[in-house]
Length: 294
Image: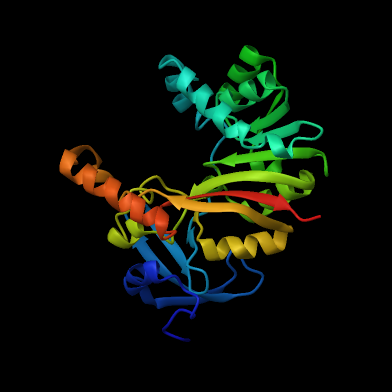
C-alpha cells in the first residue's frame, strides 16, 4: 500500500498523519465516501481514530451509540443553572433572523433541541417548529415549558416528512452521530426545494489540531466523527445539497488537561490566531448553510 496520503489531503493534517501507525494501514470506506480509501490509525487522548488519506476525515474506531438517558444528568445540571438563559434565547433569535429569506410555509425542524431555546424563539417569531432530542429529560422539559412537540430518540432513527421544511438546524450535532451521512441525507430530503440546513460542527482541517495532533481538546470529548471541508464536499454531493455560506472559526490548541491552567497572555495569543484561522479557513469549527438543489 502507498505510504502517502492523496494529493488532496489537507496540509494542516500532515503532522497528525506523521504520527499515525504505518502498520495499521487498511482499505476501508469512510462515512463521507462511496469508495474504499487507505486509512491509518492514530492514538489520541480521546481514543483511537482512523484517518482517511483522501479527505483527512477522522472517524473513531469504536462506534458505540449512547444510551437514551446518558445525557439526562447533563441537562438536569443545566436546568439547575437556569438554562435556557436569556442570552441563549437572544442567540437563537439572531440565528433564526438569518433564515427569514428562506421562509415560505414556515415549518422548521431542529435536530437535538436540548432544552429548546431555538424552537421556543422560532415559535415566537411565527415559525412552526418541531424537533427531536435524544435525552428524554430534555425533551420533556422543552415540551412542558413551551408546548412544542419534541420527538424522543436518536437522530439516526428520525422520520421526517419529505419536502416539507424551510429550515433544518443541526448545531453542534454532526460530530456526535454514529451515521452522519444518513442523518444529513434524511434532513436534505425533508427540505422543500430551495430549503436550507444550518450546520455547525468540528473541523479536522484546522490550526488547533495541527498544534496538538494527539492531545487536541476535542479528542478528549470522545467525538465520533471529525470532518474536514474536503469531506463535506463529498457529503453534499451525495445528499443533493450545495453551499450557500461556509466559514470556519476558532483556535483552541490546548490539551484538555491544560484547560484550567491557561493564563491571560496565552488567551490573548489564541484570540489573535483565531482571527488568522478564520481568514485561512482553518478554524476548529465549520459553520455553513446548505441548500437543497432544485
